Image (cartoon, rainbow, N blue to C red; front, side, top):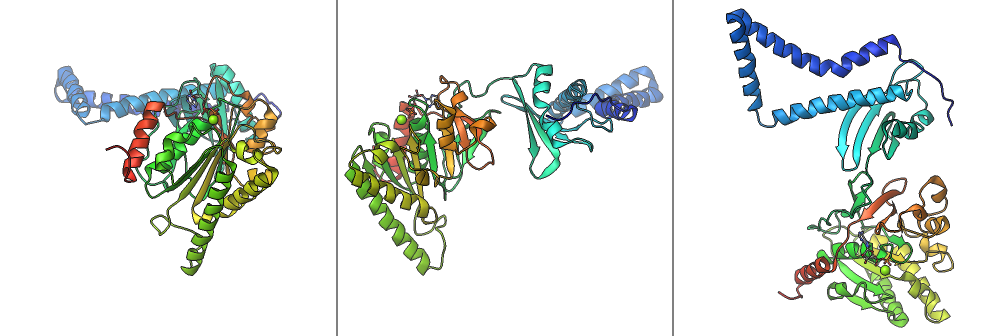
Length: 432
Ligand SMILES: Nc1ncnc2c1ncn2[C@@H]1O[C@H](COP(=O)(O)OP(=O)(O)O)[C@@H](O)[C@H]1O
Ligand SMILES: [Mg+2]
C-alpha cells in the first residue's frame, strides 16, 4: 500500500480550480449581462429585457442547442462535484494539484470520469483511491483503470447499481457476416461486449445451470444466421443444441463413434483447405473467399473427453487437439462448453489451446482458474464469487488483458424457434 500523506491544495490550484470549475457559467452570465446592457444603452430597461428575451428565443429555436446546453451545465456541476470528492479524499499531488476532469459521461450502471493525472502521483496511489472514493460517495464501487497507452490518463468508473443483477437486454440479432464481432452480453458498466470469432476458439466452463448452453446458443445462432458459415454440432445431452440441427451439416448426440467420425472428417477438410491455400500462396482464409468459416460447437465436452472406451477417448482427444491447434487459419472455430474443466476431465494441453475463455459461476476458485488460467482467482477474478442466482454472469477473458465480468444475452425458446426458422430459410430450407 502506498504511504498515505495528508496533503492540502496549493492556493494557486485552489484559485485555478474555482475559475476553471465555473468558467462556462461565468461566460454565460456575462453574455446575458452584456446583451442586457446593450439593450438598456439603446433604449432603457425595456429594450434590455427585449434583447435578452429575443436572443434567448432565437437560441432556443436552434435544434438541439437547449439539450446540449442543459447537458453542458449538468456535466459542469458533475465535474465540480467530482473535484470536491477528490479533495475530500485527499487525492492531491505533492505539488498541491488534483487530477483534471477531462470527460464525464453517464453509463447504464453509473458514471465514467476520464482524468488527467498531474505530476507527482505514483500509479499505485491513483489505483488505490477507488475504495476510499466509493466509501465517500456511497457508491457500490469505484474502479480505476489506467490508460495503457498514456500513463497520465486514468478512467474512474463509478458503479451505483449492479448492471448484471438484471437480465441483459435482448440480443441484437446479427444481420451481417460472422466475420463481424457479435454481441455476447453486457459488462458491469452496462456496455455491450462483442467478440470476433474468426481465428479464435472459445471455452465456456461453469457449474450446472450457470448458463453455458445459453451462451453457446448465442454463438451458434450467430453462425447459423450467416448462410456462408458451415456448422457442426456435438451435444452430449442432445436436447440443448437440437433446435439448430436444421442449420447444421452434422449433428451428433451422445455417440462417441459418430463424434470421432465427424471430427476426423473435419480434419480432412482442414487439410484440404490448407492444400488449396498453399497452392494459392495464401496463409489463411479471408472473408468472401472460396471457403466459409466452419463453426464446431460442442456442448458437454466432458461427455466426449471422458466417455466411451479408452481407445475412443484417446482418438477423440487427439483429433480435437489437432483441429483446435491447426484449424484457426483454415477458418475452423471450435466453441466448447463443459461443467468440469479440470485437468482430469480435459487435458491441460487441449484446454490451453482455447484463446478465449469464459468462466461462468464455479463452485471453487480452483475451478474458476482451470477455465480462465492459473492465477486469475487470486487477482480478484474468481467465478466462485459470482451470485449463483445471476445466471449467465461470468468472467470473459477475450480481447482485453484482464477478464471482464459480463452477463450474456439470453434467447428464450420462442426467440430460438424464430431464429432457427430464419437461419434455415436463409440456407434454403425451413418453413416458409
Ligand atoms: N444469460 C442469461 N440470462 C438469464 N437467464 C439465463 C441466462 N443464461 C442461462 N439462464 C437461465 O439458466 C438456465 C440454465 O442455463 P443453461 O445454459 O442451460 O446452463 P448450463 O448449460 O450451464 O447447465 C436457463 O434455462 C435459463 O433459465
Ligand atoms: Mg448445458
